[in-house]
Length: 113
Image (cartoon, rainbow, N blue to C red; front, top):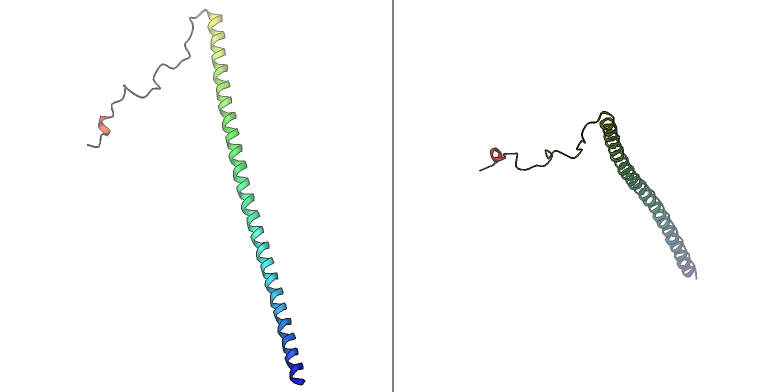
């Protein structure tokens, strides 16, 4: 009988220890998941920041290009008004062809052979 009681007490102690180990394992798992979620949140915030910066840069470039076009248009308008007032012949605002790469350049000196 004492042997059975000792055996049962040992089993109870063993199951209590197993429950305690399981509880510690669950606590560690919860802590690790919490850290992982915090790290994921940081990465997501950084990624969102990069996306927002990209959108801002794109919009800034659009606005800068629009400003440049407006400036060119205003300059052309001024020149057209001046032309009208002074009776000068029409001015061609198109490129004179100097911006086209081709026939005018001799690249032979850069030939590796």
